[in-house]
Length: 287
Image 1 (cartoon, rainbow, N blue to C red):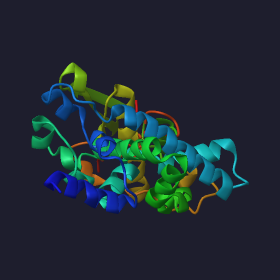
Image 2 (cartoon, helix red, strand yellow):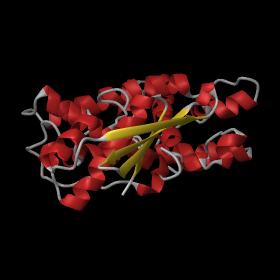
Image 3 (cartoon, rainbow, N blue to C red):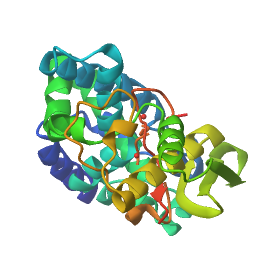
Image 4 (cartoon, rainbow, N blue to C red):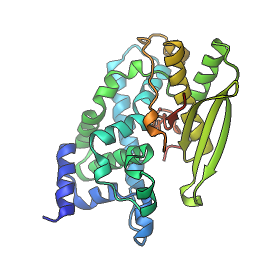
């Protein structure tokens, strides 16, 4: 057994099932690695597939567990589960950073703990399991990975439209109108946008994403979370979440050097997919 195959067997043990080796390697291959190695297959197609499988399984679970909630409320719970920060946390629990195939640039800039890469890889692994083992095994894997998040989704705050949630919160507390400042860096094939959201001239959240829209949503999510901690639980400010327990959302300041998240995601990008992707100031390619 080679060192690489031994490592993959360790990952399979963490996933709880064997997966075709070639698919597993592809699920771990970031496009930066593929670019440096002559155009190997990347994990992006598997990520695309896994995102859909993940969304279906989580939607089904929420539908069955909350028979009295409206479509809009269910969508918000789903967005609280399937976002970049949440999925990056899943990736860290699997220690995916140990297995990623990254290019030198990503390696040098902390890519093994970058939330967007970890979240995308979780989805790619789900896609690989679906292709190799079928929907039943993929469903079981999703439940193993995110059931705890599903159980607490009603306490996780907004998720579908963070910019609107932040604007409503700011209006309610007379904080002013949120303003966004966006910058971009990187080559065209790996463009990264960074957004800061300001209230009365003070930065309250900074988020990153693959589009301006995603970066602004991520910044708004983290600002909303941080302000909830500072001012007090205001889950009612999240659309259709007035019937939740009122627990606040904590901001994840560990992502200061990268992107979480929710919104794929976290995140987000797609409503109900990765909604929260960013970093705190003071939450599924998810564009």
